[in-house]
Image (cartoon, rainbow, N blue to C red; front, side, top):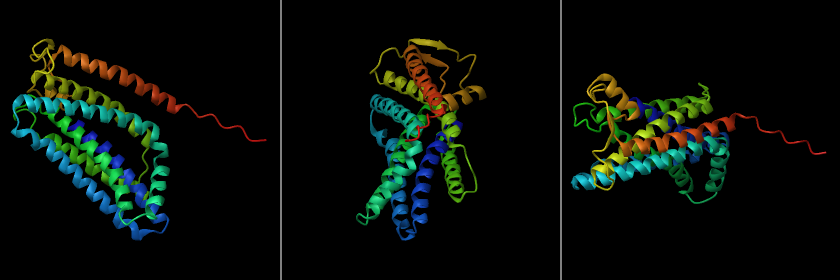
Length: 286
């Protein structure tokens, strides 16, 4: 539940910042009459994201078990790829995000009636689809082996909804100037945490593909600490809910986790340290 709360908070805050930039720019440039087009694009992006999440949840139910596992495993790996790209993109492109969006608004305001709505739809929809896919994958992983007894599906979803709700409130307060958040620190810490969560989702995706018979080694365990960390215990539930930890992990799952977390975490730390170094000041032109 906590992992999904943080995913909802981070992804929701990204979308809220995009909307804040769009709305603030129109207000500051005295073009309030165009605001309904922005809200129309945002509403359509939210509707599409919810429909995408519903399709992921209910779509494969009529398929065989192996087909469901194959789809689930593949989408989990795709979700990890998307969220990894997002973590690094946010670390490098955030500084120019406002200028980029303002340029798109200026171009769209002089275009057709739906141009501004499309700008908002694309800006928010990208975050929405990415969030829906990753939340779905994280929820599938968090409720793995639960069989309705350990972690009910509604708990991760409630966590995600609370995170998104807090993000919307924070986005509004930032827009109004009521709060000031060090976004660099926020996205750095949540990015590091998401790498660990994504590693668990990737391992879960590999397990799904093993259950589908696509990958080997389903019963070839790297370790089994089910007696020391029972899945039904509070700490077992906590580890599963936050890091998607499985007490009985196959060798291929462990290899996938290590091959993802170590190199991605190292690159992330290198990128964070590089961004903290002061940029050289250009010499004055004589």
